[in-house]
Amino acid sequence: MAIPAIKATVCAALLLVCACQSQTEAKSDTPSGYPLPRWVSVRGAPASMRAGPGLDYPILWQFERSGAPLQVVTETEEWRKVCGPDGSMAWIHRSLTTGRRRVIAVETTDLLADAEAGSDVRARVEAGATISLNACENGWCELRSGDIRGWARETALFGTAATPLCDPREPARRGSLRLDEGG
Image (tube, rainbow, N blue to C red):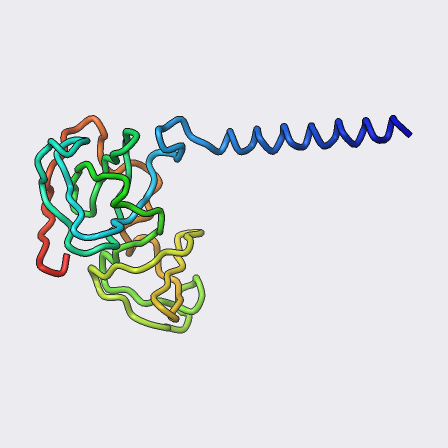
C-alpha cells in the first residue's frame, strides 16, 4: 500500500516540476518577463513620449487619445522603448501602456464574416481607425469593435509585425506623426 502512495507522490512532484519548467521557459529574460519585440497599446491620455527612460528626459510628443498600438523593442524595469506607426521611436512609462492588443488600419478595409476573400462584408474600417485585435492566423486578423467582429487582411493593419520595426540602439525620434486634438 505504501508503494502506490509513493508512486503517486513522485508522479505529482514530477508534474509540478514540469509545469514550473514550462512556465519558466515561457518567461523571457527581460525586466518585465515578456518577450521582445511585443505589442502594447497606449493606456491613458495624455501619454508623454520621452527622449529617454526617465522623467528628466524631454517630452518629444504626447498621445492625446488612448489605444494607439506600439511595438516594444527594449525596456527597463519602469520604461518601454517603443516604435510607432510612422517610424517614431520614444520611451513611455510602463503604467501608460496596456497589453490589450489594438491595430491601426493603414488603408480602408472591409471586415469580413470569414477569413477568406469574397466572404460577406460585416463592416468597413476607415484608414487610420484604431480597432481591437483578437488574433491573427494565415495572413488574416480577427478584429472587433463593440458587437461587430470580422476578419481583415493582416497586410492592411499596423500592429501585427513579429519582427522589430526599429533598432533599439537608435536614439528616440519624432517621426512623421501628426497629432491633432483627437490624438
